[in-house]
Length: 134
Image (cartoon, rainbow, N blue to C red):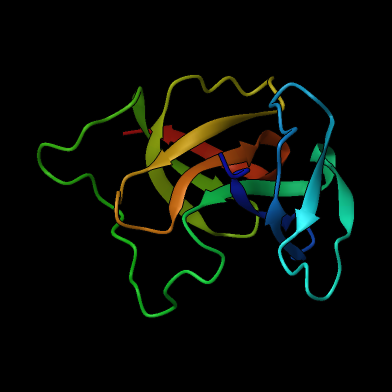
């Protein structure tokens, strides 16, 4: 089985794309093998405290033309409670979560749009300005 494809977004705006096998939400760090092995087979340590979110994705390119739906379609299978997450940088994500607790380092968000590139997102709590239940 291939390791998950992830895109890491730092709180300062930097982005890293790669593969990860040691991400755990309760650990302060994990490692990414960069997505372009033809350029480098480098592995980078990532500290959770520096991040906005970790995106578990279908592919690294995504579809720049795709407009993500910010609603839950009728009959959609929902994991946990519906939430709207507003990041400190102004980005808003709609999805559901099984375990949001503000004192934890973060929480998983399952996007409302099942056709978007994100399979799930680990939202870092310190990068969030507001979480609202829908």
